[in-house]
Amino acid sequence: MIRYLIGALAGAVMAAGFGVGAQAKLFNCNVVYDEFDSFMNKDFLVQPEAYVRTAQGKLSRNDYNSKQKGVLLLSPHRKGLGVAIVHTNKNTRGKFLFTWSGRGDLRGSPLMILRDVTLFGRVQDGFRPRKFREIRVSSSQTVDLDTGRPTQSKDADILYHAVDAKTIYLEAVNGAKLSFPMETLCKP
Image (tube, rainbow, N blue to C red):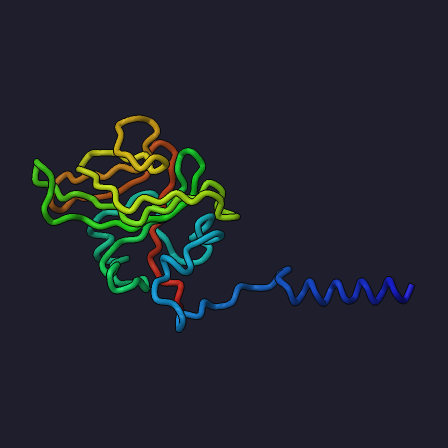
């Protein structure tokens, strides 16, 4: 009986000390150069809104400039890029950076450039990450992030649309989901 009580007490102490009901610690940003690479993985990709305030589904260029730009800790070569977390319509989770090109397409609309697109076949164990360095998208074009190709099919996950110089946005389509982190994980 005493052995049983000692075993139960040890199990309860271990459960309390090793995460059952424990709260996550603050992120140590003193050792991080880029939170996109260091923090935005696994549980964050499944539920980013549990960690930071996010915009859901659609983000305009104006909202990016006023609410996300410069908020996240990104390395110097990524400064000024937007960050999106995606759940594709084929149940793949991932993340990407984005920006707009000043040069534009044939109609004069700026191109959307997706960078460092990283998708996980199974996000919980990091199985088979698929990466695309860069995807260029013209206005009113959709992209299937699972293949990394612009398309006009129902497989598309995102739509980039530039109506005019002031009405430019990126949005999820066909059942895909986008989350745009609006605050840093490096909270004081």
